[in-house]
Length: 406
Image 1 (cartoon, one colour):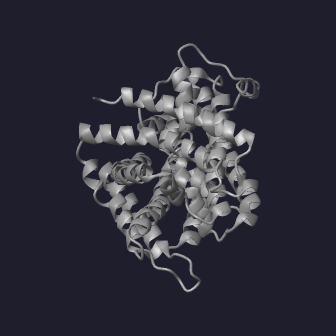
Image 2 (tube, rainbow, N blue to C red; image 1 turned 90 degrees about the vertical axis):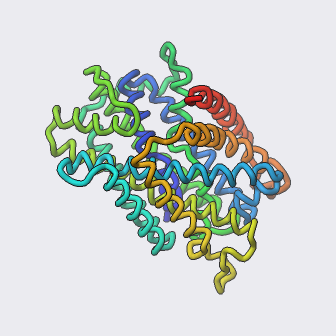
């Protein structure tokens, strides 16, 4: 019965999160296990709040943003266009990396990246949510079984893993730890959760308990997956003092270490899991963020999204949905050949850093007002989590903007 939660969780956990978690294990062993777990708990609260807004109000998160004022609409419009352009190239490249490592005599990284982008386009263009969900469940199952299997293979220190649940900050690790907490599965796709809940056929407050079960199952699965990557970093790299390359290439380095220690079969299996994690983000973003864009356009241009016989919007067959699919796929392809312009990096970095505090703090505002029936407004715990995560994301936002190549 579950589904949307696994889709949003798998989409949010991409190659970058796998590298960050593995590097955390490499640098600090099991010390930051608690931070990875806390990150998953924060995403449970954010996704639950988004889904609850959709089900309790019968409107979308974009309607909520519009009710706040004109500035969220303007910010979101610029953000989703710039973000899609840069993310399209990033996602295609991340999906191509494990394929290049698996088939060293095959096509180049650029060719594999383009093929992955086109495959994502076809998978979403010709299918509705039900099929997309099945594809995502298959990819989630693949990456979960492989990565957890590798973690068991490297023989985790269960005592150290348990001790790591106690919050401890190694010297000089404050900002790194905040990044780990904020980065595990946290992207614009969290805002897509409500749209996937609706696409699943869950409508009205009576579905909120089911949505909460779905969300918790999904992020519990993600939590185990993230812990498995941290174990790989702690056991495979920390003890041997192996340094990873920056970015997604770090996962290829993990494959090399696995090959040296356990043989090529284990390394190749890990690369298959790496591909499943990266390509699940392609399909999830291509579908979920296109739904967000279609909703954005439909509010500015009524009638742009057709309505079916049952009175429900048919976003997946609308021109805004397909236009954004094409935007994610084709314009970013030249970035696979060219270095990203500094101005584009700065714009993308600023807008991207601002999104998570924007989401957390707007949800905090919306779900404590009379826009939501009293029985479905935030409780004290949710308010504390949303406020705390909003402040944390603001700190990370300032840090990320400071680190941009001005």
